[in-house]
Amino acid sequence: MSSESDATGAALAVLRAMVTIADATVGRNTEQLTLTQFRALRVVADRTPVTVGKVARELALNPSSVTRACDRLVTLNLLEKATNPLNRRETLLAPTAQGRRLVDRVDRDRRQVLAAVLDRLDADDRAAAEAAFARFADAVKAYETDFHPLLRDAT
Image (tube, rainbow, N blue to C red; front, side, top):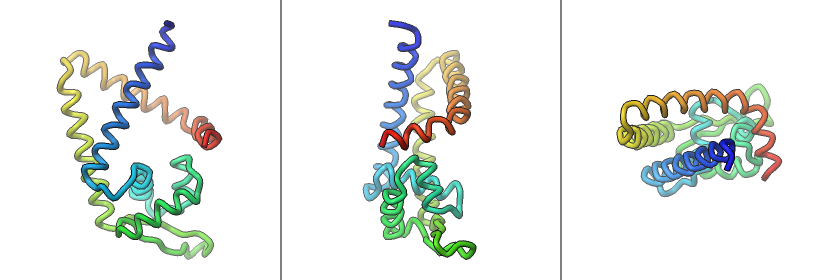
C-alpha cells in the first residue's frame, strides 16, 4: 500500500469520524432537522443575509433542494425569508434568534466532543493533530473553488 493511499485512508477515517460527530450533535439538539437542513442554516447564519442560490453554491446542492430545506427551516421558525429589495426575483434568508441559538448550541456541543477526543491524545500527538488540522483546513480552503464544481457534477 502506498503512502498516498495510506494518507487518503486516514483522511477518510477522520472524515467519517467528523461526520459521526456532526450527525450526533445535530441529532442531539434537534431531531427535526436533517444534516443538510442544518448545513443550510449554518451557511445562512454565517453569511446573512444570503440568497438561496448562494446557499446552494456553498453546499454544492441543487437550488430546489436548498429551497425545500430552507422552507422547512422557515416552518420551524429557524429562518426568515424576505424579497430582496434590489432584485425582487431573489429571496433573502436570515436566521431567526431561535435559529442562531440552535447553531450556537450545536457549535458548543461539537467543541465539547472534539475537546474530549483531543484530550485522549498525549501532548505531542495532540499538538501534531492540531497542526495537521490547521494545515488541512487551509488546503481545503485553497482547493475549495476546484472541488465545489466536482461535487455538483457528482450529484
